Length: 159
Image 1 (cartoon, rainbow, N blue to C red):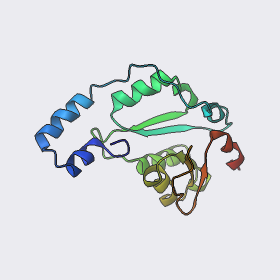
Image 2: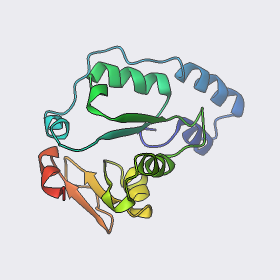
Image 3: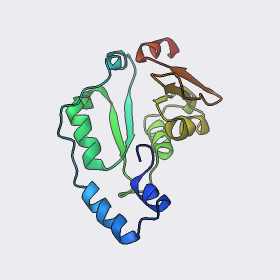
């Protein structure tokens, strides 16, 4: 459930449409209220002298509350929340949209993410540079991507 939209998980688990709809209604109201902190190495991302964008997926209210709790909104030129209950957008279409909106050729865009099947795959399909953030270094790195265990390695990858 961490990496797939709830509706997909519900379908895979055979949850009825009625129960899925009720669950989605509930999930749309949830907000994160506990203290939340980012990884200590996040400071390296904050300090990068480039435009940064955050593309995240999930229910809008929950994602906005986590961004607020982390206090990171000001670190990004634009934040896009991919909410499957509100649109058909995906991380891939969001990356393409941002690249076009800000006139960045795909080859000039570096996508950093922790999911090889989501943002890393999307970046590679769009001809963007893909960096797998894998703190444990146990995830298989897709062909064409590079891996870092710590955000401090990102600066070395900038051209």
